[in-house]
Amino acid sequence: MRYFSFTDEPSIAPDEFFMNEAIKEAKVALELDEVPVGAIIVCNGRIIGRGHNLTERLNDVTAHAEMQAFTAAANYLGGKYLKDCTLYVTLEPCIMCAGASFWTQISRIVYGAADPKRGFRRINQQITHPRTEIISGIKENECSILVREFFLKKRNKS
Image (cartoon, rainbow, N blue to C red; front, side, top):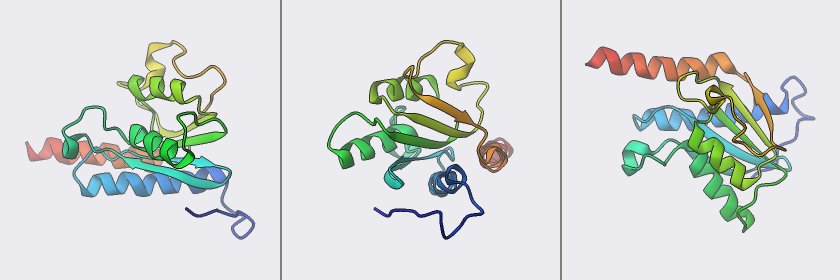
């Protein structure tokens, strides 16, 4: 795992920097013909977990990017709680992933694109941990384009 310093690159905010890392994970999913969603978990400036959608490859509806990253981060830390950690994910978490984030007690969730059809915010109920800070819209356009173009290509193939 690497530490990241922002003194060398003052022009980029940490949230944007780490969202770029989540976008790299989304592009790995895209190469695998998975819905291009990527996630990373950061603790003290260090990426401790990475994940991308693997639902098709694993034939597992729960193999979302966030779930992969939660597992990797928990294994790295040696415990199930992700206090003082931030989840960066390219698409607004679904209800399942937001619920899982509750149990991890993660401190922050930063996501790129909103998901009005399947995102957790559409149900208008608190399902993340009450102390979890939610930040949306980081690199939203780039994150949205990945998902939109993926589904456009899928529809055009049918």
